[in-house]
Image (cartoon, rainbow, N blue to C red; front, side, top):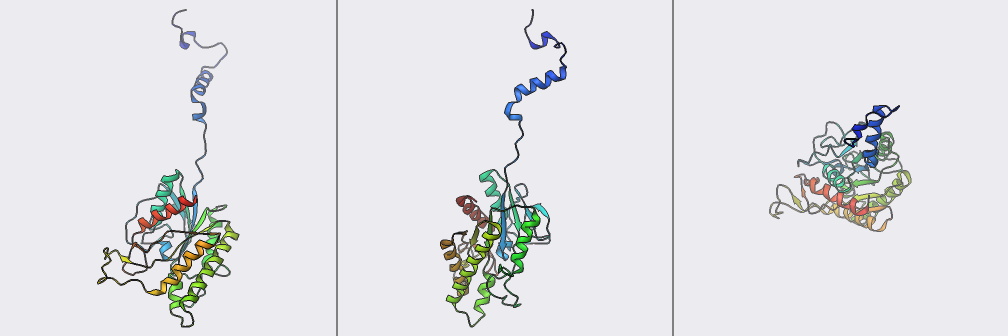
Length: 290
């Protein structure tokens, strides 16, 4: 019969050559050609004040290929500094480094609802304006905004709320002669536990909390020379400690990254080394399976 190949037989009677090609392709394709949807992205809500927004002069990596963010203008955009939270922002944040590390660890994208706002208190009235605490769940504008952003983003539910806040409350209690350090500790701890309960009821997810920094070093003084830099004032300590204790004892609170040893901006309030802070966020989320 000559060369015994498929071509030697010619077209099969009554069978379209195109159909033969499709059948042959199907034989070699198998399961590799079956389309599967991409894995669900990680979904985190970013909440708190300026260190959650990002107030660093450090240049952060470009995370646009790894995730998206939904900011205060109700628009989804590639998650890249400085506009992760809102257009017109000029400073960098921990979130690009967190997004890249988290995505590399799991092969999944990372999406954010970015609801943090600078200068917002949780427990006390604002120390300058006297405005009610914006993050108080019962009536706070920042808390209401966070829930609204989650709804309008199109999410059914996030994986966790990532919280970095407390400088506003540290300033507020320190300026009120009727509040001592023990009061501030108890007030903030109760406020944080209440916030976690509300978030659990409204969103069904844990609150991952980063304590405010005790600010040991500045980036313009990396050796922490005492002659050049004075340690943070004691007003931060009750808020810092209350955050840690709440996380250790409340079922809906997870302890996030510490930042006491990181370099800070010259204003002493804001973390400069946000790349390392972002990596620490990613490590916590990986360890907690969030």
